[in-house]
Length: 267
Image 1 (cartoon, one colour):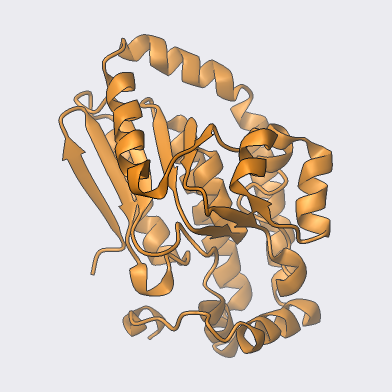
Image 2 (image 1 turned 135 degrees about the horizontal axis):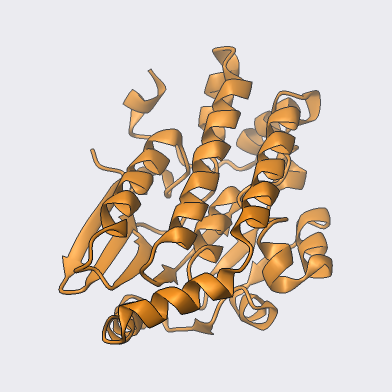
């Protein structure tokens, strides 16, 4: 079953996370499909803009906590964490490197490293109920997905520190005020608003948009280095006693945490 779907409407591509049964929790299989989808669009001159969206009740609940525990039981946790965050960093940079501007249409919760997929977009539209939350303090992990590399860059170090050190929720209005998103759109109008923005972008000269996007992102090498530092920290901490206890407590205390129907991913 596909975990990422690509749809086309003239010059606009829509890339959709669709691991619905796990609320789009990030696993290497999903990220590999996302990277393949982005690679397919990068050199497609007929595609002039991209919408990034997700099916189901949440944009993404971040790293799959049940998968972390399963990989620990298999003795593969550090290797798994290194591969997962490596792919996540690749996906963030692939979104930034796309010549086409990316519009993210975000709904529900966005936790852990999945925030990086949102912040790598060029324009971000939020449904009113969106909540960003790091959850590293509860899980015992090192921050990944750009919580230091991108949140600090876009919102400022003090705000990033509050989100990480206090495990503070960032709701939609605050996300816009902090510069993490552009606007809030009624949930029922979100997808069409993102598509309309993408259609407007697609009508403008591609070379101009590509140049503007590249200049706005600035020093890519530094961003890549910052993401690599997050990955190293994540791998260092993932098998530590605090992280082991954090995963077990998280899965015990969050009784509503989804259980994957895609069991084949864990064989």
